[in-house]
Amino acid sequence: MGRGSKTSTTNSDDGTSTGDTVQGLISLLMKMIVEDKLHGNNLTGNIPETFGKLQNLIKLNLSCNQLSGTIPSCIGRISKLSILHLESNKFSGSISDNIGRLANLREIDISNNLLSGNIPKSIQALLSYSDASKCICFYGGNRDLNPLPIQKKQQTF
Image (spheres, rainbow, N blue to C red):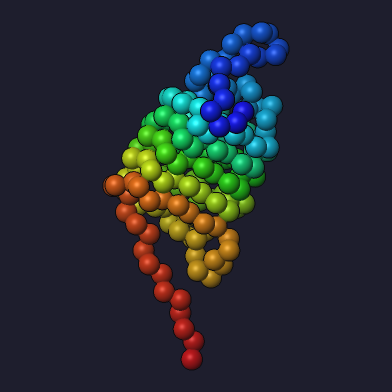
């Protein structure tokens, strides 16, 4: 599914329409377990907890939709996830610490939402200066999200 494509799909198993909700697409995502491209499809609602069952998912791109609610902690159970794009939605509340526990996470974009509070220490650890190539995080455009503290490299003499 590319940018701007219709999200109304037919389930090939029983011929029923899955509609435009995230829950309606879960059965399809279970089959597309490596990468999804559901960005820009005007999806609405919350990300359901069943996303945590997508154990082989490597890239999750739900950007540029109308998704709301909190970013669920179940995303932290997608152990192979390396790229997470949730930008330009209506997510609110704080960010789950579980997301920062994803050992393979290399890129996270949560910018342009309604997030608040602090970025969890587990995500900050992924972004540490000691291994700058490990992970990048985009989080701008969240009015009530506290910026990451500026870390200075320690100098040795």
